[in-house]
Length: 313
Image (cartoon, rainbow, N blue to C red; front, side):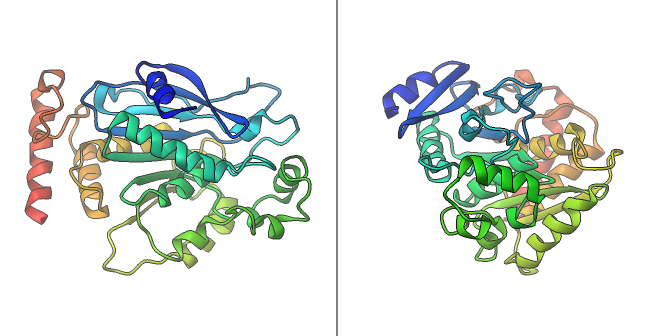
C-alpha cells in the first residue's frame, strides 16, 4: 500500500487491510479530531479460532473521545491456517512482521501527523507492545501480564507456532537468530521509551517466568525515569483477564493528560486522577482540545497537574 493510499484509508474510521510484501495486515481504525496529536496502537492476545472470527482486533478504548486516534492491529500471522492461537506479532516464514510493522507504524504516524505514540497490549499483545514501543524512542508502552521471552513460555504454544509458522526452523533458539523472541534482550541495552508494566500477582506463571527474568535484564538505574512496574491483585487468579480495564485505563488517561512521558510525571498524574473523582480532562495548556467538552472540575485538575509538571522542569 502506498503512503497516499494509506493516508486515504486513515481519513475516516473503519477497517482496512494494509497490503505489503505479498501479505496483508488487517487494521481497525477509529479516527479522532483533525487536531489530535496522539495515536494508540493496540495489539490483541491469544485467539481461540473456534470461537472468534479472524481477523480479530483488540477493542477500542472507551471514554477518550477525540484525545487520541486508535489503531487496532490484527496479527497477520493469524491469517495463516493452523491450530496455533498466538504468534506475538512476530511473523512467519516469508513475512517478517516485526520489520514490516515498524515501517507501517512509521507511515501511520506520519500520515496522522501525531507527536505522541502509545503502544498497548496484554499477554502476547503485551510482548508486541514492548517490542514495537522500544523501536519508537519517546513512545509509551502499556503492557499487561506480557510474555517477554518465548523460550520461557509454555512449550506447547511455542512449538505449535514454530511448526505451523516457521516449519523450517529447528527450534526457538534457531528462530531467535531470525526474529526477536526475547524483548528482555532489547531492554538490557537501554530503555529509549517509557514502559508501564502491569502484572497481576495472582498470575504466578507470568510473574515467575516472564516478569522476573525481564527485570533481571532491565538496563535501569535509580536516576532513570522510564520504567513503572504496577504489580497488584485485581480480584482474579490466573492469567486471562487478571489485569482488567479498570487497572490499565487510569494509566491511559494519565498518559493522555501528561505533558511529558517520564515515570515521575505519569505516576503523579495517575495518582491525581485516582485521588480526585471526575472524567478525563485535556491539559489546560493544550489549545488543540475544546475545553467545552470537559467539566470545570476536570479543567481545574488538569491545571494543577500541568502546574506540577512545569514546576519540575
